[in-house]
Image (cartoon, rainbow, N blue to C red):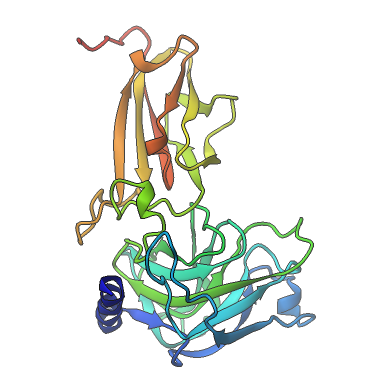
Length: 333
């Protein structure tokens, strides 16, 4: 009951201060499909997309959460067609446009899909100083960097911003922005409770038992690993580049250091969680990310190191501490 009250309170406060769309009431002007691929059969008129507001058959209590993450009576269903591009999705025309500003805002979209993968939102609109510009101009693209878990409701939170003076008239929710080339059949994805606000924290905590803080959730069975380095590279143990590398969540991950000529390393800093570009703790006091420093003496002679399982959550960014060769001083014990 406490969880239901919390969600209801959040819904009321967000509705008063943010753009909200649900499908129990008509919070939108119209629905359709959209594909950013100009030659898409859904833009040439060869195909029509399938979508509908349906009764929520996915309102059950989740054992892991102890409550129903989405008790809504109605949800939006969309057929993810294998004939559309990786940016094919359902289009929602807004009753009232909102402004795309230089300040980062966040769009929350509850998604339930039959397989893991990334989610994308495209904002369609026009500049206020260009009256002739089409309101269907693509003004922003926001894509998740963490795979959305399959067969459960996930509050996907995506940051976006612009130069100001831009009105967003429509949102395109792409529930599956992976390449459809290998798909043998279409799939049905479900969408609900879209909110645009200033809060980067997901409302639903999808795996509270797996983390030490409920506001730092493991939203998928996988995590996405990147290195952020100059004067060298941090690689996977097999030599693979860490650029959107998909690893298993909550499983130790071995890396290998490769300094540029004339450099060595003193260790690494591992940053993990979500919204890594934001503050480590948001305005509501929720932990968004943490970081840990690992010293060079913890590495093997082959320059490998195994990152602990607890750090392999959400987005993982590895900063190699590369320094000029011959300047490393071992810390005193």
